[in-house]
Image (cartoon, rainbow, N blue to C red; front, side, top):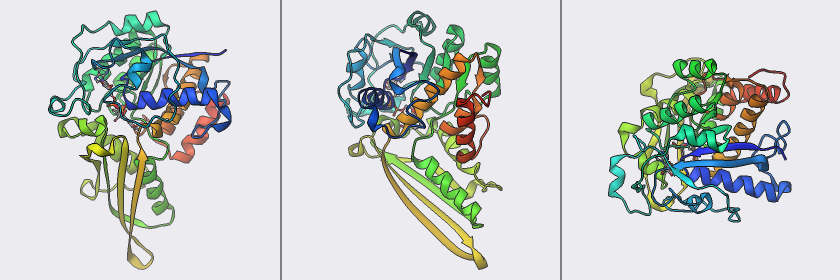
Length: 363
Ligand SMILES: NC(=O)c1ccc[n+]([C@@H]2O[C@H](COP(=O)([O-])OP(=O)(O)OC[C@H]3O[C@@H](n4cnc5c(N)ncnc54)[C@H](O)[C@@H]3O)[C@@H](O)[C@H]2O)c1
């Protein structure tokens, strides 16, 4: 059977949803929702195999992957519980700036607790595990830690998928490092199946296409998972805010002035767990300069919302590896990420990915 050997940095809610989805679709291929294709270029979801995992939380480090995925503070919905006993134990990663200090003030069930262990050498573990791809699922604001894992990939010759908003794929210096070593990279900051970003982008495009002038807009998000708890520390938020804002601005011919667009996480509500709520408001003018407003509320389980997108990104990276293609994978980055190095509309990006899968586009 074709295999894609994957490593995961950050065994949180997104990792949980991803692995549940892989196993669910392996067992019941007739019920596949939320992927571009069940068979993508010869690879099915069940071909993805996790061979290494890294975390820093004492309830996860040293534990089997299955135990770690369902350990607190993970709180996403369990939609498929029959996970196999993976022969993988979670390694201690270097903490660096992965954990915000304010998180120490919360109920242990809700927050991170750092394990008292020496960090492993991530590049060495990657090499020994046979990993071909590492997914970076670290908390927002982990600037140093994210870059440490990216360096480890460069050292170990492992492809890098950056699911969070530290700018690596979209930073030219980093992109060049991956080009120089012919190692593929997809990033930055995963764009969920129907999440706040794609809804906001689609409505912005609708305004453009229908000739409505968008004067001002906001997008407020809140939830009860560790991602939202972490983001209460506003000093960690700069890249997340930038990533989400530029993704919406990219749909406009003329960008809105900073004062007229506000996008960001706004609060943490513990009882919501992994349920994320998003409110979008758009104020504009239509025919005759007459005002119109649009208010939208989205309620969605956060982590599963990005699981299918990640399964597609992993399989596209595997195709690149098979074809000997390194550096930025532009089409799949534009389709699956909020801050790709090159932005395209979602419709254009999807078309480009189909061409890439069929081998009619290089990257
Ligand atoms: N739909 C989505 O959920 C979505 C969409 C876009 C982006 N993201 C981003 O993806 C990332 C992961 O999201 P999540 O919901 O799984 O977060 P999470 O808080 O559930 O998981 C983060 C994990 O990283 C671990 N960690 C912290 N520092 C570490 C380090 N130095 N080394 C290794 N592990 C470390 C934590 O212990 C935790 O297990 C976040 O940055 C989030 O903003 C998620």
